[in-house]
Length: 106
Image 1 (spheres, one colour):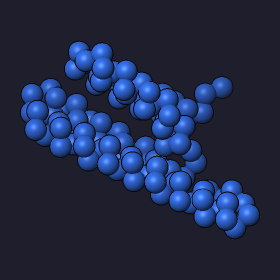
Image 2 (image 1 turned 30 degrees about the vertical axis):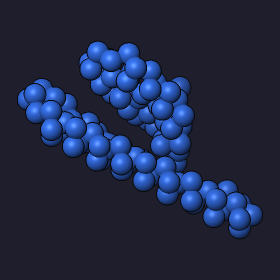
Image 3 (image 1 turned 60 degrees about the vertical axis):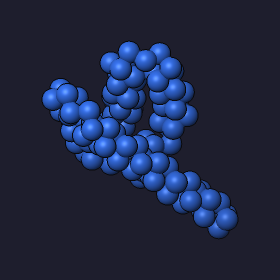
């Protein structure tokens, strides 16, 4: 049975991969596939990613692409990636801190 988190994780990964496909860049698509494989389980671990915020960011990126607003699409994409990187760093720090205390509380 698929959990809501798994459904969201797959949709998020599919969004990122489709951006690479739409750009018609095999190199970008391959990089996205690799990054999604490495980061997706961590981004969607309990207590990490805000699904509503990601969905809103994705919608804004798609809107900018539809409007052919390259600068806005790039700016929104960079902000989205930076936020996800921050989430990963914060999650890593929580895990490292918990490990030092003798537990893996997230």
